[in-house]
Image (cartoon, rainbow, N blue to C red; front, side):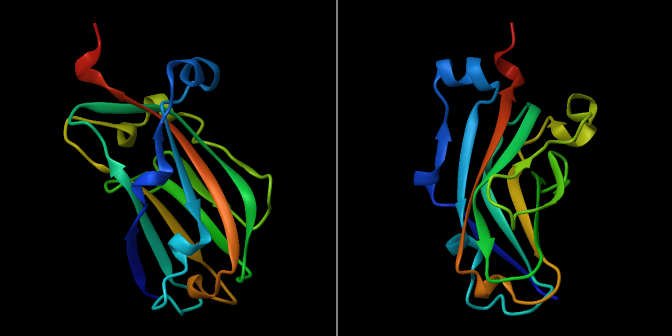
Length: 158
């Protein structure tokens, strides 16, 4: 098993509009493609790929997170994702499969109370993709997922 890292392209990181925030209750959207994970060197059947989404503010909290598998990931027999930070990779979304299109990846039930979803120092937001059996991250041929978080800067609170 080897661990690999990459960073998502800025053009697939979107702060949402006020209207979108009001409807969905989230502030940021991150679109991840299979090509982000299909690193040429990630050829092991139990390899992981950590995708850095961006940095949090210095004083922050996340009180909502979820994901949606737009297109099933293909090319491997078992691929899961976790969402969190450099401190706790599964703080927002615990390990869930991305092999089924249309799947909703639910956030951790007690997110607002979790100590790993808040800090007084900046952290990188991350997704960790884990290949568990046949195939490898490098063998991915398709897949797209969108991840949403409500990332709040606590210095802006009244």
